[in-house]
Amino acid sequence: MKLQKLIKTAGRFAIVAGLLLAGGSAIAAVATTKHNLGSGGPGPNTFSGTAEICVFCHTPHGSDISASVPLWNRTLGGATYTTYDSLGTSSLDGATAPVGSVSIACLSCHDGTQAMDSVINAPNTGMTGTWTGADRPAGNALIGTDLQDDHPIGIQYGGGGITVNAKTGTLNDSDFVAPLNAPINGTTIWWVETGGNTSREKTDMQLYTRSVAGIDTGTAQPFVECASCHDPHTTNATFLRISNAGSAVCLACHTK
Image (cartoon, rainbow, N blue to C red; front, side):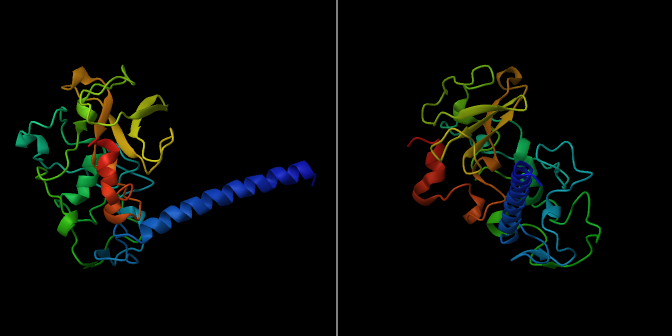
């Protein structure tokens, strides 16, 4: 084998190995958290019917194509939610959209209206088994359908003012950090930087692009959702994207 070909082949193996290690690390991270509901999970809620980890949220086939999250394996709930804006607080200056986007996926488990093993596409071993602990979220994980006591979701970031037509415009509320943006597959994405660079990473506060007919005539723009602050695949406490020591999560967006 010629030296040049040998180098190329070694390079390919190195790339594949790197991808496998990265994938393995991600799986290992979820495996050690409460989001591992399989029989090998750390608890407190585990299901004896399967050792699979990802199946409780994702499936490679037959997923819910109405969900805005990848290959979602749960039925999006039809619950009616009472949201923070119903409190009428004067400090809430952004328009609030109906509960949707990635937040409705989170709530399909965390609102407690359906069991955690209620999946669309069960693994080959089926979903026959028993639960250790509750078969629905409990304690702080049970958000419920009354969201008045939770951080606003489905709300314009920074009171609005930044849209796909004004990507670097001025936020209506000056008490918020201006988000960064980039195009991905023809869609503009926004995030609030936490690492001091200009590329979006999992540790940045993610903003979710939504187009809601009743808000700015449906112009796509960044909204705050559950997964803006939480990453279901991290090992951080309460699945926060970064540690909240010194209120770092809060101060990433709010200039106080």
